Length: 377
Ligand SMILES: [Fe+2]
Ligand SMILES: [Fe+2]
Image (cartoon, rainbow, N blue to C red; front, side, top):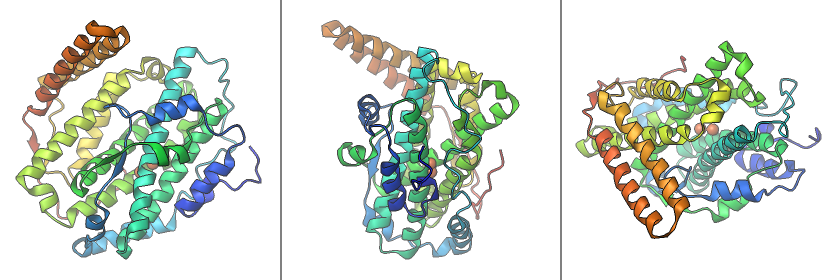
């Protein structure tokens, strides 16, 4: 890489970061296969979101002011400025020599992570741009800054493999899913906290088993997950400004729905990458349950309900859901009338498995008055 080029890791605003991501490209920036993958809108691929920005902008953080100011001070101090770029710790990877199945799954993992990071970036940047509320604008400027760095760094890694996601193209062309602000809180809070739990679990595992660290990017996961952790904290505080957002009966039902959807999607997605997890030395069942456990523990800070992931019906229905998605893939490959029929049946099986997960009795939490947590895993 040309050391003269300013890097997104040093950018202090999201605009600067994104401009640098584009400028960093040496090889042809757009890699069609990777961008096509990132453009997909299926149940399992990361989506782009839009919301009612005016309603979000109208939030008053006065009820959580003390905690809010502390968190914003920490984000303003920008502890990870300059972190997300290659340095001497970045080992050279023999992409050509990598076993093809592993390579395909790993690239799929990187593209999907990059899309998810960038999805956060786009949403937060839009909130910053449209907002008039100084508190909200400042928060979203820091969060979009961080996500631009994360996405840019993954693209650095992808570029070495000869692929890159065209982020400008995605912004313009990818379909945006509308969620009302309340759902944005649940979905982004969960994705930030689950992101933290995923990154820290892999990081700790590789600390103990460094022989499985087959790519240098995992060395960056600790600081990375701390960014995600504080983003999640911000959403916890936003939800805390108004008890209705989490405490009403319908809110509880929706939180339960989002928890079930996010956890079960992660299960199916991770199980589609057996070689990747094998290379990491990670048992997927163990890893996913561990991530659910950490996320559920953290979410007690704000969610009044918690899924019972030790219930006997939990694993059984997750496995059913996974089997249904595999059957759907086979039916899609088959095509024709038989394929269509197969897809419908598999869809019904997936829906039944989802209902089975959703209907497991939930545990109730006594939510604390002050939600703030520090990363502890
Ligand atoms: Fe991120
Ligand atoms: Fe984040």
